[in-house]
Image (cartoon, rainbow, N blue to C red):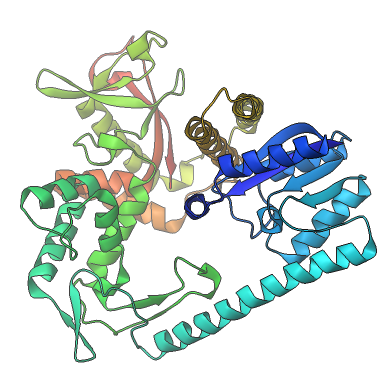
Length: 470
């Protein structure tokens, strides 16, 4: 019998005896004892069984539909699914394609009506108990939150709970205010963590700071007095209750920090906090690559990243030139808005980029099959297999995000808010501090496409082809 071995683990289950190597060993031995032919291993590493949106499960179903598999073997029923509806649909899919289902540690027979009823009942009771317990816990915590009561856990940095009331911890609140000042002045989460550790300032638990802890503290609405519920668990049912904690930070500062964080997400490394205003924003019109800030003598300049590897002939240019051209461009649009034509989205170019990304996704799928084969034949250890599969999943997700971005329909006009911002920026640019200019660029501008006319000199040789706003 041609058999597919389906294996699923989460990080926690690795520690509870459900590791991929343990399941692989048990299922392989089961097949050998039955004289079944192993057609392939379908391994979900760190995947939840709450739905069927799993890459290896989808691949296995495709093979079943192509008549390559006669039986699906799992270690336990919950490796396949924890949902009654999903179980019913999967069993129906198996039956439509003359594929059996077996558990190596449980007695289930899906070849008869009674067997299918029994397996459905078992899954139904398990799901019922799990959901009922979750509902009771969720209802109690939700009601406590709505009443402004503490629902348990740690209070968090900056506050404490004394005699049933929340109070500000003054020395921590002072540190928290400094952290917001540092972040808004241009420091990253990582830089703030390093600064705190160098100053000998510890977290509430006495540990050293890292960028994850800094981000959590700076994005916590408790700092402005708001108690949140369901933000990380269920966004659809999440809500907030104001004026529960004594506020440490004013709402304007908090919102400004969040806006800055959102703007920095598209940048990485030094791009987000360097003194180069246009770093990560400028694009080469000749090859499409990003332009990098470099220092030549005492002046700041920008250079195409492909030029660094002799793949593009775009010359470098001074920041003074692009800065002045940028302000002139804004003035031209803002004060002559009736004469401005916005460049439409180049659909043909985007379609070509999407096709290239889809080809890369196909390559990822082919590599995943090779890793599966290598692991099944003991050519890779469990750790090596998981590392490679994780890397491929991350690449896949990255390409999917890029495709989704290209598929978005961008508006073909500048709205009133952006127009007002452009006027204000053009009039007040010189009065802004260096970090304010940097933050403004990150928040408002998506990209600036530039070219160089080598027949011209000075500022006139810099030509801004297009500016795209966030």
